[in-house]
Length: 394
Ligand SMILES: C[S@@+](CC[C@H](N)C(=O)[O-])C[C@H]1O[C@@H](n2cnc3c(N)ncnc32)[C@H](O)[C@@H]1O
Image 1: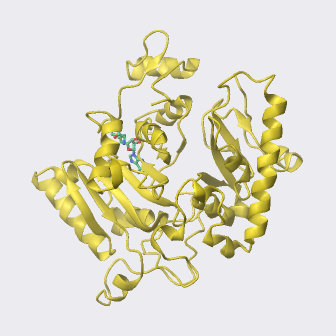
Image 2: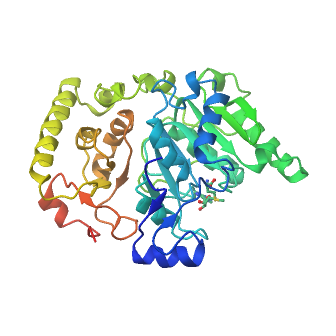
């Protein structure tokens, strides 16, 4: 694992880790091999998941077909950190709750992550963005409010997407955990998810690839399908709904949204371009322009920038993700931000195998200070008047 095994932390984090974790050795913070769930290390856990799914050569990327992962309740994001070596990028999310500053740890480790909570509002990501959702001991009550949080995962998973759940409810035999397991199993069955495999401490479900199972449900079965005018891609300040987002004829239904495997998907025009009215030619032109610009940027900056200086990069106006795509072979990760009036473009970014979020730049971006070390405003003059936070490199 390359990123985040040991870090020289900022002064604030150093103080916090000293008090909270005991990971501080006087010079650096040493992270343990994984999170609370990964007894033998996150690397072995990742191989175990691939084995359970019977993926070739025990590789969780499954030939490039698993690329975007959502890790909910990520802790300090060790799962996401170890996935990077597998060419898988995780959007690791957790709130600032009793596990204080976990996302600050993750970001200072250089691991893609953001503050986020499965609560009342939709996560700021488009529908069908992730091939795998993951929760290990995330202590989320999945049964609350008619399964609304599982329905949010359902919205975010691609057709045929997996949910890997490693938590006592999946394996413990005491009456309370049995009750929760039975209720979850029943709810997910009504949502047409199927158990792919259940082994040791983990269960993996898969979301259906078509509407056929919904059509076979008894009338009145809960949860209901969302109404036809619900836009599953609307995610900024939208309250979650306790309903299933069915596939429409407009939406691409095939397994994995009909995408080619990573890394080809980075530069291939994805089927959902059609939904935002952008042609394949425009997409390829954008890719070419950004490849040229980025290579020029690096040439100009080489002499003034220290090696390995950049890691957490934010593109504040990411359009089709061309800037992030052009950085593929560098040692950075990019948080692509689609301003709210362009939020429909974020699905293209996910379909390329990149990650990002929607944001309204009239508001402050909810993160820790001095975390992102490079910003790439698309329209700098307009952005300057709208920015709700400042970037700094110290
Ligand atoms: C015990 S830690 C597990 C961390 C990590 N998954 C691991 O296995 O090491 C529980 C995590 O779930 C997060 N969490 C709890 N409720 C959540 C919610 N509603 N949405 C997102 N994360 C949540 C906590 O903040 C914390 O990161």
